[in-house]
Amino acid sequence: MNSKNSNEMDTGDFKANYITLKYVFLKRSNYKSLASFFGLKFDDSTEKYRRLRKNLVPVKRLPDALIIGVKKCGTRALLEFLRLHPDVRAAGSEVHFFDKFYHKGFEWYRDKMPPTLEGQITMEKTPSYWVTRSAPRRVYAMNHSVKLLAVVRDPVTRAISDYTQSASKRPSLPRFEDLALVNSTMGWGRAPWSVVDATWPPVRLGVYARPLRRWLRRFPRSRLLLISGERLVNDPAAEMARVQKFLGLKRVITEKHFYFNSTKGFPCLFKSESRSTPHCLGKNKGRNHPHIDPVTIQRLKEFYKPFNERFYEMSGINFGWD
Ligand code: A3P
Image 1 (cartoon, protein in one colour):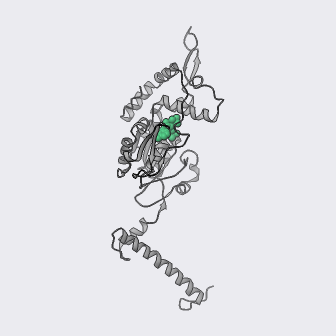
Image 2 (cartoon, rainbow, N blue to C red):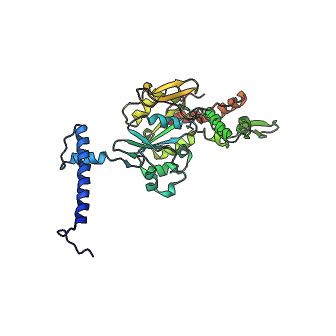
Image 3 (cartoon, protein in one colour):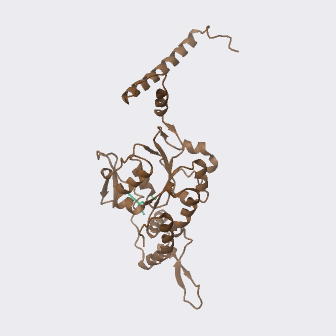
């Protein structure tokens, strides 16, 4: 039991308390100078001071916005572009909470987030959320007013991009044409005829209408922004203006942040408007695609046509992929 009362502090106690008080005082004087820097009058007793103190300490928060997909449509480009904004902070790598690690709980998820100041947007991108059946329900359980972003691109190009990524890891992979089409003997007396293999993941993932229906069962259309992967390449500033508006951000990312790098064949970034540090996405983004037989391309276009139309109808946007 501690036998000392508050009047009986020994020298050690006194020293410790003195140091604590000095520390508190120093911290407060820091806020004081910060407050005056922001043009605010400092008064310990005011609510303003308490709010200011809270706002100046970055803390980890659950995301306010998520890039939920779609794989190989330009999700990394979108995240890198958004990172140019001072009011956006994003987790660096894909967190996979709503598909793989949901059992770890929201505290685990929060811990993966970067610390943010009040008013800054916390984000992460995991493209597999788009096709994870339980993701809409789980995301809704976290925050039903979260903002969702999905990049979409011509499903034929997306499939080739997906295949190119796999082939870069497995050079022995059969040709795209041999995987995208399968022989079918369906139909009385017909010669074997090749049809699109709708079960092959690179093909299946381009049927955007199905996952969209699932997300729209949980979230209103106004909570989901569909971003054109083509426009993100051809006119990144215009597409980023839409994104910033949707997220309620000041339009800070503009034409001044982009330049077209002809070697890369894609837009690259200036980290600030002053055009100081140019930066392109890594080698695994913007790969050269193999030449694909035009008959296969045509078959795929025909295959996707009704799905694309359904997607345009549901989303209210004609992406012009036909
Ligand atoms: P390719 O590498 O097949 O060309 P994701 O980040 O979702 O995996 O998407 C990758 C795709 O983003 C790339 O596919 C590329 O076409 C596209 N992309 C869009 N903007 C880009 C940019 N500024 N730099 C590189 N790739 C970009």
